[in-house]
Length: 174
Image 1 (cartoon, rainbow, N blue to C red):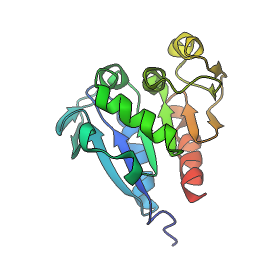
Image 2 (image 1 turned 180 degrees about the vertical axis):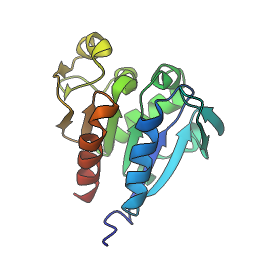
Image 3 (image 1 turned 45 degrees about the vertical axis):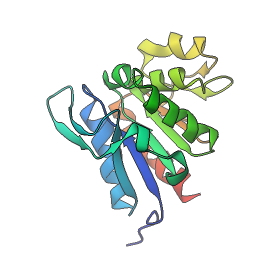
């Protein structure tokens, strides 16, 4: 079996009330391909999902250097509403985008893209409830399982995870 992504390093963002599948499915999918995956959060420590499942963040946002990562994955749930309260986490996402790195956001994670100010002129999708926020931030919003615009990858819900992960892996192989 070929592990295509052994040279790649990915940051998966965490905060309380994250959607379980949207964090763990990409996490394990990337590890399966040989990538190094770090859980990055506002502060080091344990965060709890919507359903009570814990994740341990080992890297603090203020220490995370965009230059050392190839991609950032932003899970949804209610976590993005908490993530966007951390200027360091928002800055990290903006720096990843500005550095031409892959930024992958699913569900409510679009809120982090809004806060990072990186949606102007982009075509994206998200959980339908935050469509207005995305459009107001300058994006063209479409209802598709996955949308790829340059290095930006967006999806709507956990049901879209197969397409989301496929495009994430494809972008990292490029």
